Image 1 (cartoon, rainbow, N blue to C red):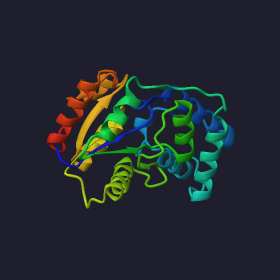
Image 2 (spheres, rainbow, N blue to C red; image 1 turned 135 degrees about the vertical axis):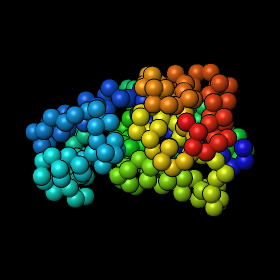
Image 3 (tube, rainbow, N blue to C red; image 1 turned 30 degrees about the horizontal axis):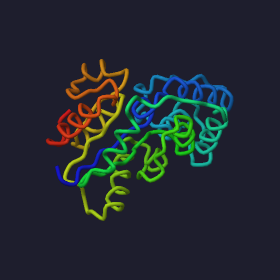
Image 4 (cartoon, rainbow, N blue to C red; image 1 turned 60 degrees about the vertical axis):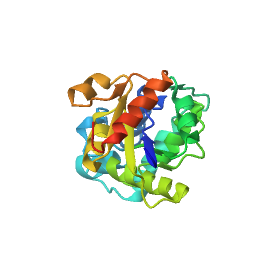
Length: 229
């Protein structure tokens, strides 16, 4: 497909970071606001770091949810990451990214619900080098679909295109599937959570990216018909 954009989530998708991420977030909230948060992100409206922070502050703690308060949450989470932290890449992730970036007519972007600072720490801990990849995080929008659109705009600028002919979002959570469906774009589920994704109707799923040919075929098939799950 000409001018295809493949957009990746980070946590649980490109890197195996969910267990660490959940603990850091929960500990930061406990320290900063003495509040035990629910780390089942599907229970929140947005499942993004900034959106969740706004929801907890405003609706559960009845506190100001302005940028200053949310920035303090981001800083508190980031400060909990040890400098020697090491995380695993999802098998085959780096090779898949490099392959896609080298293909003519294919763009690559990252759209993650993380705070930008913590996303950078996790990518660094996984030694996944994506400095040149257009990226959007929860500071771009509280809602994941809005983050995907922000990443798309950055990729369009990189490739000097008004739009891509097709898009596919690669993620590990039900919220990722929901965002892709709302935007009417293709979706590929990946990681340990493919069971719930299948149950929710996702038909294109991968355990990881180790089989490069299978990963490419699945991505291109998902993008053939926008909105196909």
